[in-house]
Image 1: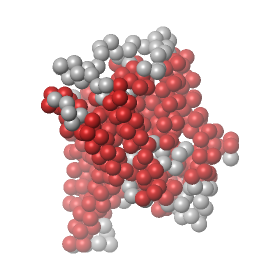
Image 2: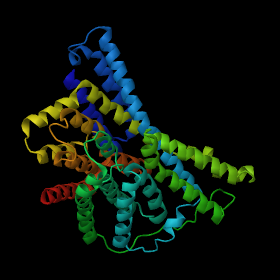
Image 3: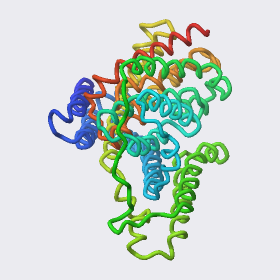
Image 4: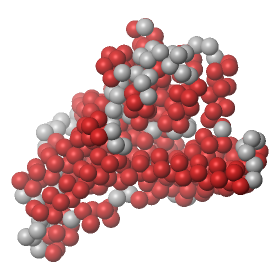
Length: 434
């Protein structure tokens, strides 16, 4: 049953990768894979849980599922809240505040501007929120699908690289920060340069291939069929409050110690109430397009369900012991912290980096590697940036994949090698520094 569970996950993963070839939506495949993994786990529980039997083993499996769903729901509610805030800003043309200032159509210049903006923004927000915001910006700036996907692929690398050097930039860095493995100033000092190299190397390579100018969308955005346009005051207000709500999330977490999804829900409620107040005197038709109740219909629900399915499947591998076994295997065969962390980073492009880092934190104590040691710093870098190698290897990649409908195989052919080269360049930079 151990191998059966692993085989189901691998087959499901292949079906997700070949979504456009087999013409089955990845969300459906992910949900089926996640469900089957837990079905196999509970049917074969006696082979997985050798020290537990009878009703206790059933209780263990069901409680593990509830625990995993609790962790997953935090991510899903965060994603739902952030996507809603971004959509309401978009509905009020708020992103024109930024897009109107980006006048260049030169592919190389625009790519560098957007990637560096993403790199620093993801350190202040986090890589997932930044990916959602930048996806909305890309749709306003680029018309051609090929250009749109190419820019989006580089933005995934930028978002993950930017999140790796900040204690609040990625779920894994938050885990290491809260767990006491790293301190805020030390991770910034040690990982900033490797993360920057991780982005700059792919950017430099692609700059030699990029030529000419991008085509901007020609159609003018109108809020409804009646051509109603928001005022400049409404546009700027919703943009300021919306971005402020996103930026407030890490501050909220630091002050209250509550999970980030609570901060995003607080921000969403403020934005919601604000839009209700400023539109209270408008006609029903005008309100219909501007209200969050309407914006919620535009949220990409299949992407959220895909996220649910893939994380549930990974949760089954974690609870059944596959990830712990993998960690022990790495520890037994590799003595170098560079080798162990490098492999963990590559694996994080296949399996979610959160359980991988959680398993690593469980394997190695602070006695083995004290706070701010090279091991923990490199783990933060590798787990954060390694996910860029495959589009479903990071929350940022999954979000952009769903929003912009990027094909898995297209990303594999066009972006994965660039991401891997940047990943290795960052590790070499870390080694040189230390």
